[in-house]
Length: 242
Image 1: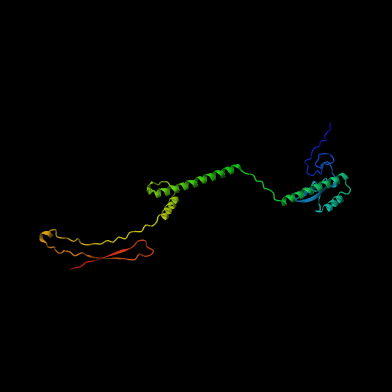
Image 2 (image 1 turned 120 degrees about the vertical axis):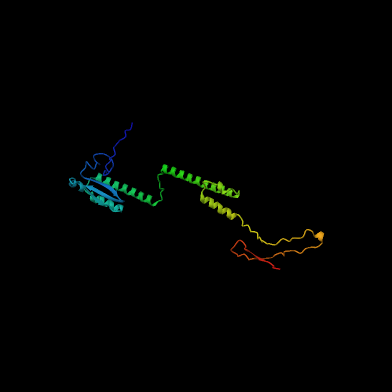
């Protein structure tokens, strides 16, 4: 049976290996070095025994160059007299940090799908509002069609109650546009006195003259202007005195 070697991870961010043991613990060692990344820049943090009594100045931060070879030379220079195991772990951590920064830049340049959360309560509320708006639109259209049918059927306007005034006016305008304009007939009024004849013409054999002469009537019609729809009629009466 093969025994598996187990270990515990360390929660301290300064741990160079991430394992909880005496050799790689930053709290148990007064001389320690690690690699950290701040805003895309890699730094080398070094802790020396002479700065342990001063917590604010305990770590020395050294900015590494962007070139990989030059950064490795910086690590070798600052950790020249340190333990060989510590130098190897610091270099390995630097290479891993450099790799994930490259991956982050590659992802930033490529197009990525943006995932957003959806509020189900807001979605249901918007859906109810849309359904209500559709029902109102259908109702207004139905009312407009009903008004048109009533106007075509010559239904009295007194029978229409609780309707939208705008819809009624729109339907009324549409109905007026559809109806053609009817031309009004020209009416001429004339006046003449009745001619009385004697009923006893056979007995007397004489036709009596008419007592009253008929009146002369002259009708003059003014030409209708282009802008007016109705014609104006002027009646002039002429009477003979004889």
